[in-house]
Image (cartoon, rainbow, N blue to C red; front, side, top):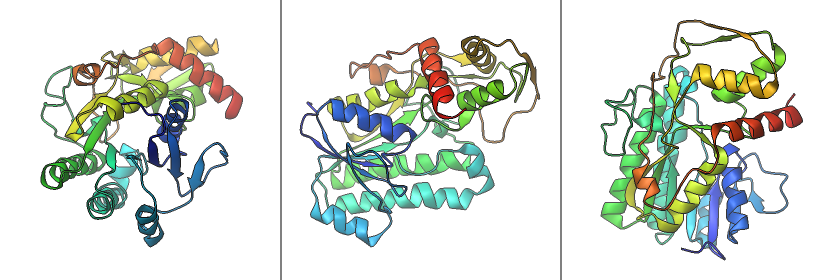
Length: 306
């Protein structure tokens, strides 16, 4: 499917992932409207500071017509969900099911892409993890995301909504101001001589650069079945946390003494690696190597944060 002149509503389009997806959509010729409570200084795209739980948002959906609705709004923190599980439920599960109900009743022809998470898997039964594997989340965040995935599937089966869920693995890149890669860059620029990390350094993740995530989203929009299915958004390759720390140090030109606390964080699994066969069947292939992604992320940090 060609994105040219497609009308796309992006919820959370001023955020980390959403802003990169908006950039790709604009290049592809789509007509984009962003909904973001924080607003935006970007004059290249129409941005409305609406709360998706408000009556104004319901009125907006009734007045405008869209080919796609992309949902990137809401929290993306496992530790915060452990601290405040009910708030996390309201912000993810409750608000997302409300969106599905609005799609069913107000704009049933609008195709819907929900951003879930690899957190739905919990500790994997084997590696790599495929979409058909058991989903046993170990954090409130993962439970909330999985609940919405199930609702997406049921709304597709019962009401004919065209829906798909995305399961991103460990995203990093310019604009991200939390999680491992950002935290390591922040710590190493503040203290290039020493670095203390959680765990023991052997914990591994399937890291994917945010620009590849944006490309994958467009690929699912264009070629996905949208029958309630889920897609792993990843590279199919892993790096340990120690390898990532060393890579960032090399890019920064520093050589710290690295130590480990030995303790992990509640809700975090030890090892993740994705099977991306389902996404690859849509003719997607990751473009950015970890070295390239880290270089671009460090450059952004030094230019915008430090």
